[in-house]
Image (cartoon, rainbow, N blue to C red; front, top):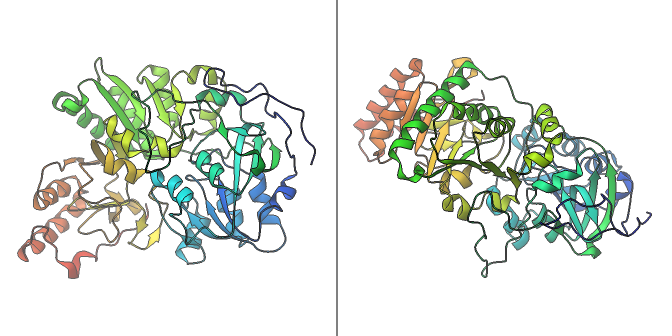
Length: 504
């Protein structure tokens, strides 16, 4: 390992772009050398969120190394195949938090070969820092994070921040991958705010969703820095599927609902702060906003991820700006942003995930949250993560953070799955991620079910009306049969679970 020449101090809010990618005396290493620093039993804290900003070469080297490790792998959100495919297939990953983003990891979790436990994004940083995952965090804790620049006691994240500040702070040792494929000017979009420890935690000092609180760098104890690995491997970015006719119909219904809500809801009188879940449907739903007349209101995105649809809205002047924790863009979206980072940095800010998803800010800014789901039952309980109540398909991500804490929570989903053979509106969902107390509005391609203020029996009527027409008669028959047994929330349990849910 050869030290680099001395370099500048950490970049600041006033001067956000580092003068060089590599500053100070750094312990350079090959990926295989860095991987050898990870013990056989260890907790691996990796950067990355929305499939971008994750380390690539060191996890790949870990998977290719001789022997078998027992690793607990904790990320901020979804990461790439170098982690969730290679480390699973090599047998090195024993436990995973908080997301299983690909088929390899999902299959291992559903077969019991991988111990997976779903967690809320907003809580994960504190759970790592203060022992909330005590049973799963085994052995030495090693943080492996991607950066666009690094110094002896600081680093600047790349295309996502996620939980990098908390993970770097909690780690026993630190390995940094400096990625030359990511422009160093990404530092311009980063705003790293590290929260105080409870019980003396101060409020997050933001009175504007697009305000800034600190500089772009994550500081760390220089004694922790064990290796710096150089790479030029790009992210394997998000691939959005083509927008379907169903997506367009859901988007049109959502747009119509929002327009009506602007006229009647005092929450939206001056400003509209929106959040959309990550994925193809969320990206498509952003297109609905182009046709909504917001008048002279300030409109901003306050959520987890910047997707291609947000770049379209920013370029069209439909948004004042966007606050998130990740640039979860397609290849085309990345090229577009990288080519003009300085301009986009005027309107886009990335924060640590425990700030972007903080209940405090979601409430303070009156966020309107729009998230999708696997299914919803007749009383408004939402299953966002499991098929048939047992087989995990992803993870709750930040959906629960927004569903529970936003001022208006919308669930948007197609009414059917499997080519129309399975209803996504069911009598009783066997797995609940968001309870009936957190879902205010459900939107499908068949309409809008506004559940606010309704009793359970009234909710059932509204939800049957937005189910696919081919299932409405059976849903109505179930509702009537359940009502015979009485109860505030009527159910006929012997037949409730005869409705199977399955993947779309």
